[in-house]
Image (spheres, rainbow, N blue to C red):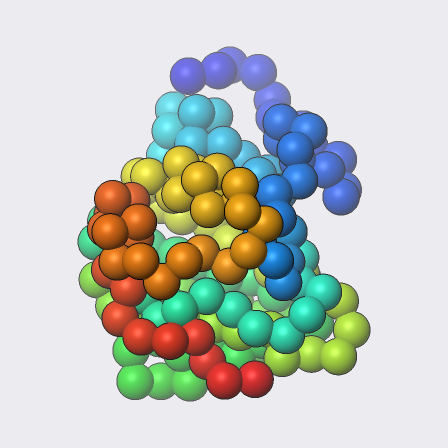
Length: 153
């Protein structure tokens, strides 16, 4: 656990790496190693509409906070339209899916508590600069279950 402040400039990644997911890039703002390992914060910047497959986290609560653009997020059976300043919590073990649906740039701050294997997941899947594969084994290895396709946009 570091006793140092963690300062990351706008548009930058904690480690100086921009990780590509095809339709978006992600930057780590707070690493799972920072502050005792209790939280992971990433900024997801969307340049194209879309999002990940429907899934759930066995051990992580996932908080979404919209910085810019428009998003649709389903948590359980509820559907929400989010715009800048809106947030929503997807509790662990509850299926969820989200998609960027705006026409400009979209930026979403996502927090995982506890971080579990999420940082490792993003490092692995971003190597291909494509959306995470729909291979259940990849998701399961990082504490998640893939449950269905992405939202249509």
